Length: 427
Image 1 (cartoon, helix red, strand yellow):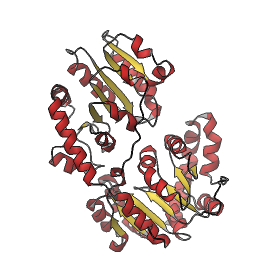
Image 2 (cartoon, one colour):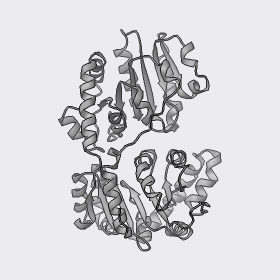
Image 3 (spheres, rainbow, N blue to C red):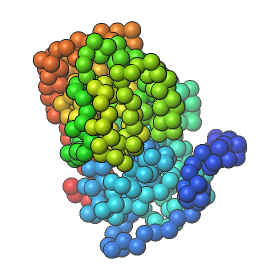
Image 4 (spheres, rainbow, N blue to C red):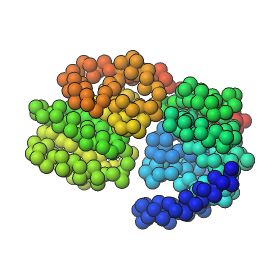
C-alpha cells in the first residue's frame, strides 16, 4: 500500500506541479520548488549546540496557534518550522524573526524529499499540528525519530473518509509516539480508527491559550461606530454579510463593516463584488486597508459616514478584532465547518456564527450557555439588527463567552508535558 500511495502521489504531483509552481509570486517560485524537493540549508544561529525540533503547521491559523508553544520550546531547541501555504510562511517569518526558527515549505510527501530534510537538520523529533496526516512523512520520520501529533482533531468529513481507508490509515496513525487531542469527540474518533488508546491524550485546544499583542492602527480612530468585522470569510459570504449590513444600516447615520477574506488570492474578486454592490449607494464609501496605510488621512478626507473596508492584508485579523463591537465568523454560513472564533472572544467581543461550525465542537458549550449567537443566512439581518440595537445584550454575550474561554486554558502546558516526556526531559 505504501508503494501504491507513493506512486499515486507522484503521478498527481506531476499533473499539478506546474499549476502550483506558477500560482506563486515569481520571487517565491524557485525557493518553493527547492524546499519542496528537500534542498535546504541550515541557518547560522548563535547557539549551534542546540538540537532542532521539526514542527509542522499547515497555514496561518496553525502557525499563530503554536506561537506560545514555539516560544516555550525555543530556549532548549532550534525550531525547523514547516508550512504549506505562502501566507503561513509569511506570517511565520514575521512572528518568529527574533527566535532561532528556520521557516520552510513542507517537502513533497515523497521519501527521498523527506530524508533530505532529516539529513540536513537531524531533528530530535517531528511535531505535527492538528490533522496533517502525510503517510510518507509519518512513516519515514517515525523510523528515525519520535513523531508526535498535537492539538489533534478529526472533522466528521475526515473521519468518514479515513474510515473507508482504515486498512491503510490505521498503521500510519499508530506510528505516532503520542497523539494529543482537543476534545473527547476526537479521542473517540482516533480510537475508532484503530489507534491504541494509550497513545491518545486529551490535552484540550491550544487555541484557548491565546496571547495577542495590543497592536493599534493609526487609521482606526477614523472608523465610524459601530464597527462590525466579518473575519476569515469564504465565497459567497462577503456578499451575504455586506447585504445584511446595508439593510441593517439603511436607516442609521453611520457604521463600519470590515471584510476580511480567508484567502488573499480572493482580494481582487471581493473588491469587484463590493464595488458592484455599492454602485448605487452614494452614502456608503468603499476603502481598502492597503490604500489607507499609504495615506493615514485617507478616511478623514472621505466624508461618508458608512464605510465598507476590505482588509487586503494578511496576519492582522487577530489584532483588528479589538476594535469591533460585533464579529461575524466566516466559513460558517457555507458547508465549510467554520473558522476560529476564539480571537474575537479573547477581546471580549460579541460573536455571530452561521449554522456550519462542525470544525469547532467546543462551540456547543458556548451555544448552550448562550455566550454567542448562531443564526442562518435568512435570519442574519434580524440577528444583526437586534445586536446593533441592544448594547447590554452584546456585553452580556461577550462576558459569558470570555468566561468560558478563560476556563478552558492550559492546553500548552499539557502538550509540553507530552513532548518533554517523549524527549526524556522534565517540564
